[in-house]
Length: 187
Image 1 (cartoon, rainbow, N blue to C red):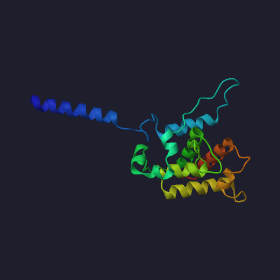
Image 2: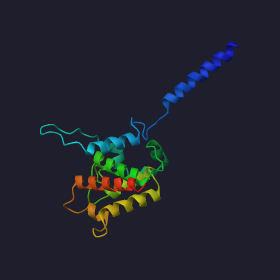
Image 3: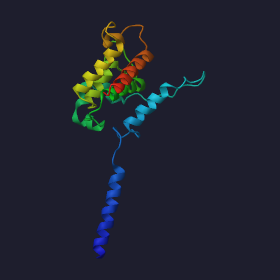
Image 4: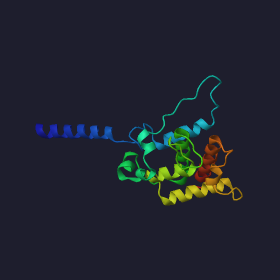
């Protein structure tokens, strides 16, 4: 009888321990879920810029090794597992993550990724895809929403990103508009 009670107590304790170790975020270093991060990023769109003299918080660039590795290395199973990949996400969430990636790690022109790890729109899309966030269908659907947000007369959003007068803020607003349109469309 005593052995049965001890075994039951041990199983309960083990289950508690394992439940506490379950990761609920896409990356082991992230303490919030993707939905919480996206909601937080979108909520910040409505806030005013910091007052004069007060600096905006600095975001850490991607790890040095990830900036140096070629993009194909992101699709290796170890890298995908490390970053929570293999997840099917809707186009709207993909575009919100593209904006978040550009906002946090920087924006580039004329190249998908520069030596500092900054990415253009398509470079951010490819990085998410290679890490396993969405599939080819997600990538195509997100690209269609970007193109629709730009309009038929403007040409390709890849070329639009690289125009000399383009700014990071314009790019972020454009990607977030496409994300909002995708969400409204149920994608």
